[in-house]
Image 1 (tube, rainbow, N blue to C red):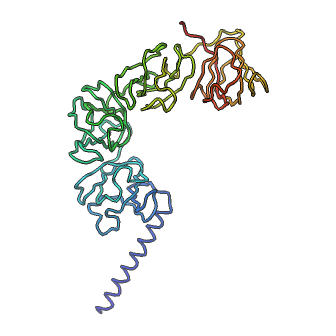
Image 2 (image 1 turned 90 degrees about the vertical axis):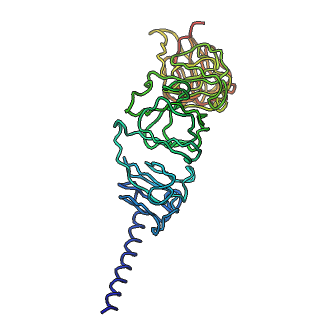
Length: 384
């Protein structure tokens, strides 16, 4: 009787092992990301895996304790993962997915995790951050779920639990402000190391900053958003600055080498820590929002431009008398028959742009184009 009893227990244990192996293999093969948190033993969502829908206060005995290298969290869910069992030690709030936990210094570090609620977009108070007084999410942690107008200058790293946040170097959301939507293990990356004096969420729990139609930028005279900052929220046709980095607060902006938006122009929609990466270091002479309303020639005017496939006005010519937001023309030379024209390397007047008021026999002097023009439009010259 006793032997039969133990045989039954052994059979049940064997079936549980087989079932667990089947579930793990099935979970690895199917598309993950349903309800709960899915953990992977290897990076890039590979290796042994398991999905949990309830809190796990201690991973010891699961085969995953300090052996998780990538994770996926179900849509709209937030989970807190912790370095020690029973939600102790260093903890961080996660959502979405992370293919390589080494990037956040969490590889093979997780020993417990728990669900901390479901997020709904735009819900007041749904945003959440943790500021740490050491890099890599270490040291003393302070949690915030709403705007804070005056903070001690101690933060060295930040976990973005949910939402996009604005961090400013002065109290009351003044000074240099930078928007961040993902966790940062070292705030030196944004020149905010021990400089955050105020912070606020921008996802509906507070009044957001300028809308894209009310874009603004900050130009700095040193790389990495350092030096003297100057803010702009409208076009500036003649700058006396030697900008080396720029923060794009909102919108897309066009930066030109010449005054009055002439010469080579570059369109940017994100902050750039070193303008030398786009060939504009110390060369910005005018700026304007990329969606500016630019009047063209009057109806019936004789403005026109001709693009040639070869240098010196040879090859196949193509004439244009109006704006063309999406073309793909191999161009060796340009005849400006009448008027002032802007030619760009990207569609919709983006990328590297040049404003021309005279013919160009050889486009190689504008090597930035790679000889392909993708948009072109007439422009009215700015007053000088």
